[in-house]
Image (cartoon, rainbow, N blue to C red; front, side):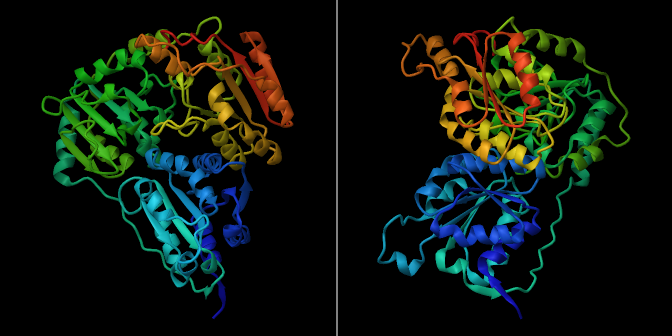
Amino acid sequence: MSTIRAADALARRLHDAGCRHAFGMPGGEVLTLVDALEAAGISFHLCHHENAAGFMAEGAHHVDGAPAILVATVGPGLMNGVNVIANADQDRVPMIVLTGCVDAAEAETYTHQVLDHRAVLAPITRATFTLAPEAAAVQTDKAVRIASGGTGGRCGPVLIDVPISVADMAVSDAPVRRPATAPGSIGVDALETARDWLAEAKRPIMLAGLDAVRDDAGDAIRRFCEAHGVPLVTTYKGKGLIPEDHPLCLGGAGLSPKADTHLLPLFREADLVILAGYDPIEMRTGWREVWDPETQNVIDICHAANTHGMHGATLEVVAPVGETLDFIGDEIEAGPVWDVAAIRGALKDAFAAEDWGPGAVIETCRAACPPDTIATVDSGAHRILLSQMWDCPAPRTLLQSSGLCTMGCALPLALGAKRAAPERPVVAFTGDAGFLMVAGELASAASLGLPVVIVVFVDRSLALIELKQRQRQMRNAGVDFDGTDHAAVARGFGGHGVDVHDREALRAAMDTALAADTFTLIAAHIDRRAYDGRI
C-alpha cells in the first residue's frame, strides 16, 4: 500500500472539501504544510499579517463557499491571528486554522516560542485538534464538518495544530469514508401550529439573518414573502437574501437607531414574527426582547437552540430555513399586505444623501458600481450608514465583520474575494483609522495582481467613538489623529491614488478605478462631524 505524508493526508481532505485557497505567513514549522497544500491543489497566498490573512481567507470563502484556511506559524504567528479567529467564531465563518507546533518531547526541554496553542484558542474555536499521523485524514474531516456546522449548531473556526515531526510522517494513502449527515426537520405538530398561525395572521413580518444565507434560503424566503404578503427585514449579513429593490424588502437592521425608529414598531405590532435563520449576535441592545412571545406568535427557525437570551419564541424549530418555510407556507392562502411602500419610503427619506459627506460617497459609489459588485466595509460609523444605504441584489455581496465588529477587515476581505472571483468588481470601504491598521496589505494587492478599489473615508477621527464622546458630554480624548496622504501611500505600493472632495470627482475616480489593471485608493475627504444625525 502506498504512503503519503500526514500533511498530504490533511491537505487532500481539505481539497476534497472544496478548498482551493489558503492565506497566511509561513515559518519553518509549517513549511511541510504549505508544500502539502500546494501539492494538493490548494494555492498558498503570502500575506503580510496573519490577522489580515484570516480575513482574506474569509473573503474567498464568501465567494467559493469552501471553508476558509488560515496558515500561521508557531507562537507569535498564531497569536497574530487571534482576532480574526475570534471574529470567525462570532461571525459564524467556517475556518480551518493550520499551525505548526513544537513536538511534545522537544517542548519538555525547549521553551523558545513554546505555548499551548489549543489552550489559547479553546474559548474562541468550535474544536481543536493536535494532528496524529494515522488519524490525519479523519481529524481533518472532523474539523471541516465541525467548522461547517455539520455536527449541529453554527459554523466557526477549528484549529489543527500540527507537530513539526508529524507533518512529515508517512501514513497510509487509503481512502477514508465520510459519515453521512441528515438535516433536521420540523415536527408534524409544530408544522400544523405554524401553519395555523400563518393562516390567521393579519400583520406577519420576517427577520432573516446569516444562517439563512448559509442555508441558501433566499429563493424560499422570496416565495414565502410574496405568497403571504410578508415584509422582510434582514440583519446586515443577511442583506440580499431577496434583492433589496423588491417591494417587500425593508433592508438591513441591527446597529442604526435611526432605522430602528421605523422598524422596531413593526415587530411590536406584528401578530406573527418569523425569525428565519436569525442570529442576534449582529444586533445592538435595542433589539433585545422586542417582541413578546406571550402575546405574539413568534416562530424561530434556527441552527441552534436559543441560549443567548436576546429574545424569546413561542415556537422554536432547529431545522433548515428554506425547507421549513416551504412546509409552513404550502397551500396557505395569502393574507393582507402591510403598507410596505410607505415604510420603504420613510426609510429611504431617513437615509437620503447630503450634497457631500459620507452618504454622498456611498450613493455615488453605488451608482458607479455594477449590480454584481462585491463590496466590503470596515467597522465604524461609515459601516452603519453604508449598510443602510447600499442595496444588495444577492447575498454575500456586502461583506463585513458584524459579530465582533473588527476594524481593519475591509481591505483583506476585498483581496480574498477578488482572488476567488477575479472577474467581479470588488470595492472596499474603510475609515482612515481602519485602513492604517492594514495598509501593508496593499503590498499583497500589488503582488497578487488584484485590481480592487479602496474607498477611504478621510475625516482624521475615530468618528463613531468621537460621536459617542460628544453625546455623553465627555472631553475629546484619543479619537483624533494627524492626516496621512493616503493616495501617496497607495502610489508608493504600486497602485493608483487619488483625492476627492466632491461627487463629480468621486464619480470620475470610480469609473477610472473600475477599469484599472491594478488597485486604486480613493481618499474621500469629509468633515469629522458629517455623521451627526445620519445613523
